[in-house]
Length: 244
Image (cartoon, rainbow, N blue to C red):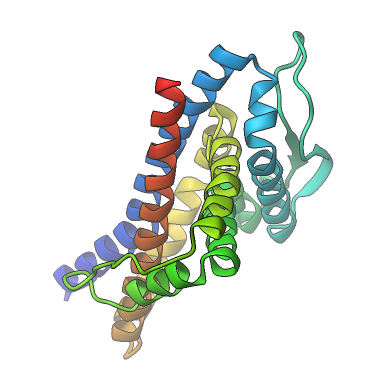
């Protein structure tokens, strides 16, 4: 029984935290490199031109999750032009009750929210500009880990070009998590882990455990497919700015 419970805990932590955070670090590292290349070639202000949509979605994601977890938002700017004194492109300043478990745990999700906000934004962008590709992505999320595959459908080039231009702007400006974002996430990390362990312990001794693992497997497949899609776009943008 103990071995079974420990296995469930490992699966839950791996699927809910391990897999998403792997893509979070990859997407953040690649797009941070892209932003640095843009800053080197076009100046700090160039990051606004090439990534203003992503910057706004990045900060809006922080803001939304701060409100969801009951934090007090002191002030925010979705986008701002950097200066020599302050290179910040946007910010959300918030405070919380450190004795409140829910608000403390929220720091994890507030810190990494831009990754999910940008992924969802690009997914909805695909839905309206290249619906054929969108449908293929959604179909891929319905498959099992061992059967997952993606076939690029036929599409019109003009909507595809529009999609790539807008998606590139979101990737460049939105996926780069700052050191402050990661530091903020760390403050809620262990609370989230403890919460997941407790929930898994309770569910492991009920008939709901199979349903839980099925839901988590589907959630993980969605994260993998959408993240890989955004990872490909991010790598392409990085290569373009690396060689221009």
